[in-house]
Length: 223
Image (cartoon, rainbow, N blue to C red):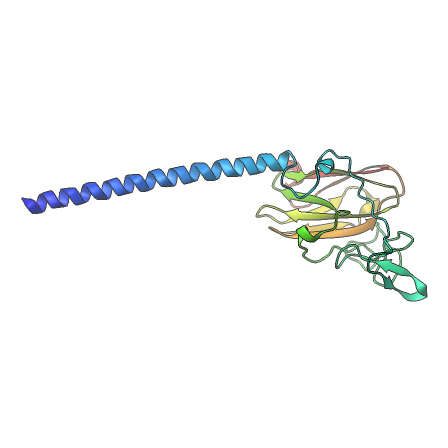
């Protein structure tokens, strides 16, 4: 008889432990959902994305100017140039984005050709200079999706993937067919190029199948 009562008590304790465990798991799941919801809301509203509020107001001028006080490189024919970030194309003191051979890059060259502006390797986004326009991309969303630069000016933007997918940003205009930048989950890369000399709005989008249709599009405004 005592053995039966002991078994019953053990079963009741086990059931109670299971109930408590399920309650804790449910509470944890709710907390995770709320945290993710707040994070996504913050990204949409321009919070916690490592760019100033002016960027999200689409008022940022992304043009880069040659800074003689920064580290410079002397190329052939006495050409002085500098790289805004490691691995990016050099920018001359005349504000021309150069190939590794010291020639002006071509925005309409074949993608990844020697004449085209090159994407960098992986970067630490926390170490990017403030002149770099920072963009985040995730499923169905580019944040911010608009930036402004000056006609013909050197321009640098970075792309950071914040989801589990691969993304590749390209431009619609044939004038910018050479520009492409690809990232995977939690990766950051950047690209330097001279903006078109013709003012206007130049659309860009994610090349991955179905991503543009979900909302992964944006615009570069050249003034």
